[in-house]
Image (tube, rainbow, N blue to C red; front, side, top):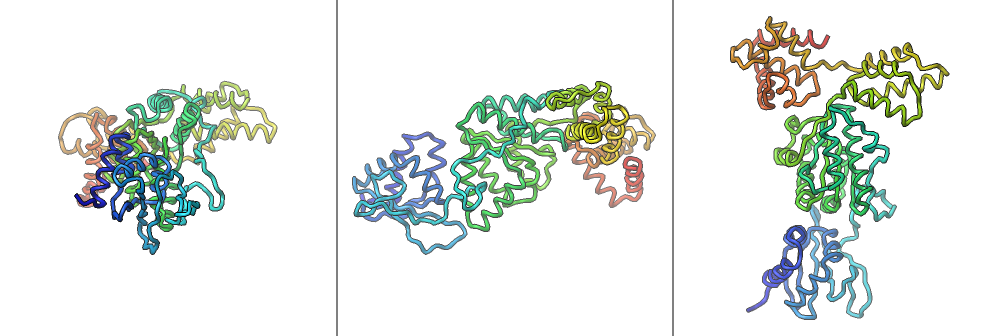
Length: 475
């Protein structure tokens, strides 16, 4: 039987498949396309220079064995590197066997440089001109579990984070999506998980990146014709932490590339950690295939801390900073700053600064002045309970009636308006809004919001309801 490129490569693959792990075979050998067989030289097409380098570094022995078995001791392998979105006049360059050096030998036995592509693998984090082999984690060691205070508002997320740090990629929390409003500790917790993993597993490659930087790196890779290198770089990561993933919404190209990176990492048992200011069901303009993958693991919400947790946060920070402050002042701050941890610590820092620079004592009067400034400069967020009370009063019914299962038109409309304003004026997720307004699901809330928008455009009286309630709730 006459040998051709397809038949030789098919037999090589059979041999390789029997000798490596299934996932490695799927990742590194299935994408290869046999191109040409000339005498004892087999040409194969690979997606990028990085792909070629990975094969040479990790699978040179098994490739040599497979090819020698099929083509004899004179077997040669030629790599045809596929250049995406580019036209190249370069011819494929030969890598001779049995050499395992990534720089092949020429016919005189002298090492010659490869010229498949003069570009090096693009590490998006390396400044041009500075060589750096190690991938820096971009983690902030100041964000750790020790100073992430546990409370009812964050217990699930923190516990899941510890579980992931103990066994990255080996729990059902993959991906782990941490979501919640501004200043509640999403970034802190994401860093804490990464820092703990680096301490326990020094050999693992951990990388933290904001979604905005990821988007910019992708844009740069497209402009520089290094998209494949960009993808393969991220596929090398053992633990990928992406902060503010909601910024991928509406970015179709970036979502597509992130989808492929996510799939590769997940299939290879790597850990993915995401943060967002929205629950997956609230992420508009995010592709459904991505949203479905975000739901594969655990979505853990960070809520506003209760009074006890706020006290613990303040006391912990004072202890770490070596500051002693009267308890009545700490209690006053905890009682009056309720929105998020960032503002809570901001008031404390202002207190310490004012007392230090102006050589003043810590007094309740000083605390009131600083807290008042923070409250005035912070846009007030109304609660879902308050919205229900205002809407119920406006339609002359009690909150219990508003939340009831009745299908009477005026009650249904009141309930839909409450859901609409809860979505518009709070940072609560659709699921959270639904559970607080009559134990409905997120789909009911989404339907209510659409109904209110439609009726506002077509029903004059309903539009008056919306305008009146907007004034009552925002003024």
